Image 1 (tube, rainbow, N blue to C red):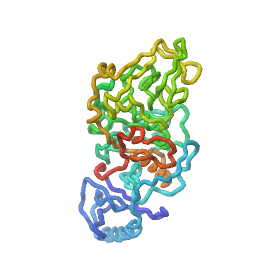
Image 2: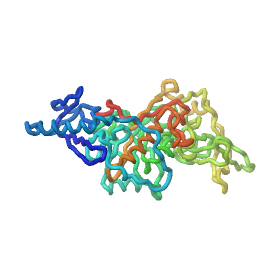
Image 3: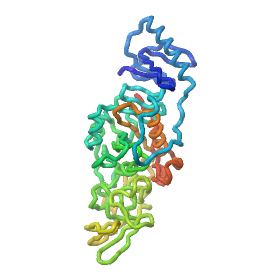
Image 4: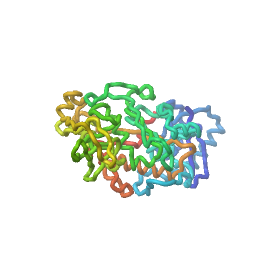
Amino acid sequence: MKIDERSRTRAGETVQRIRYGISSISGKILIIKHDPGSYISTSMKTHKMKLNCTPRPFTVILIVFSFLMLIASCSKDDSVEGEDDMSQTDDGPIDTNDDGPAPSGSIFFEDTFVLDEERMLVNFVLPQATYDSFIQGDGDVTMVTEKAYEYFNDEFDYIVILSVETVQPDGLFFGRSTSVQNQVQGIGSGIFDGTSNYGSAGRLKSVIYMPRTEYVRTGPFLHEIAHTWANHGFIPTTVGGHWGYASAGGQLGGFDELVSLGGNSYRGRLNGGDGFGTFANGGNSVPYGNIELYVMGLIGADELQSVQVAVNPAPGSTFGEFTADAIDTHTASDLIAQHGARVPNAENSQKEFSALAIIISTEQLSSAKIEDVSSDLENFSRTATPDSSWGSTYNFWLATDEKASIRFKVLEADIQ
């Protein structure tokens, strides 16, 4: 792979391409030899690179002079941690091309595959037809994951692909989670490993696609993560992959209170209000339910509550009401007897997760769009309450009852 690093002034007027190895060490310019396993960042925080040409004396002099000019323009602009005061919009068109090119500290693995200077996301620029295939619901996620593994190590549990649509595309799902492997016993799912199909050497758990970047904040992001573990047969359901008409009361649907109306009619309630969703409950506005925390490995069998499940349910004419032949109760003991204990258990299960966010688009993202998405990713992943722009929306840490975390920040060890 050739290096194609670009340095831009803040006004976005100057573009320099560095194709010969130069590194800054203690404020000095140094010509270095070919290193086939590294890159260079114009933010001067990475001093490794790949070379793709043989130096000539005149070229060396010219490049050294150019790089001195690069330092003059970049040395005052260190990378800044994710800012939390970016205003967000739930609905309506969003202008994503009003603030110039990508930041000067971005890593250009390719012209069309760029890691932003805050190291929170990758922008993958696609041809229009390829981008449209995702909006039509048949995009090839393996094309994206395999591209990621050309430049990143196998350090991610999730690869999250986001389109930049300003409104929800007609007829398209709000999110899709593709299970890549499962190594957890006792949650209703078989053991399987399809990581090699996606370019992973064994780490990747799931690939998530959502058509709007705003869904990181509003949901269904928490919902799609939950599909890593549920519902793959842990309790009976008539709503495939979700909790359906059951007292799960979480991200994948269900109620937390059941009222009998007589004559095999019932009303499900959630958080004190009438009505519930059979497959979702309002995006990121609700935390994970008790049964979800159990299959995720965040609480033990001693904390798993009994679950009521409707037998042969049918929706009624009023939201939240339904009929059923009976209501079965599945105790924690019943569920463990049926599926076995969860292995690993809550004491030994994974609590810290990592994800790579890849934003697909047909042109390079503006700085304003990158800042907005980075802010949402930082809020979603922080082990604290999100900033005020999120309102009462849950991030991952809060939704797990402060029991688990997820990282989006790309580390040096993540890059090949």
